[in-house]
Image (cartoon, rainbow, N blue to C red; front, side, top):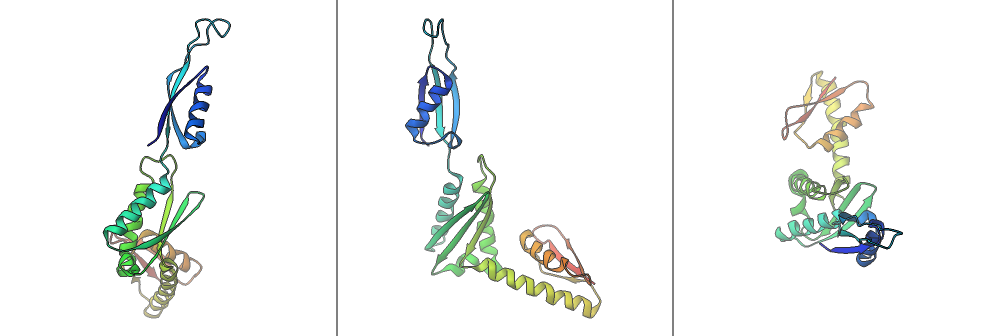
Length: 204
């Protein structure tokens, strides 16, 4: 982590000097004032310089990407990572040969990796990010599967005129089911159970 101590006639001047040395801007650093200094008589006599310690803040997205690379390498899978940032949402798109290993059964491995990356990116960071880890379009395909499942199970609930419980799934997948069936007025949905066994129930 790069850090410089700089001085100036004022705290502001000292900070500017440090920013120039680090070749960065104020929003990418942490500033600690060591000594506020003293202006002195007529701004000269008895004046004392101000000192600051300026540390280059870590780049949360880069740290998370590095962590993701390490996890994938430890699984002996070679991937390319394409990272996109939109406001406070980061998407890591993975592509490579043994990508199925990273997805796992019904995306369980991918969900676990995504959860860990989410923890890492928000650890000690100034900004809060939400994270999506995708693998060669898996999330889009899974969404289509869930939308189809939602409607199929809604029809089943109506046909047998009973509640139908779906398999446990993570919160964002349950959200997809809820939103698909929200538009219908012949069924309603609610979540039941505790994590990681929380699931959706569809009732006529």
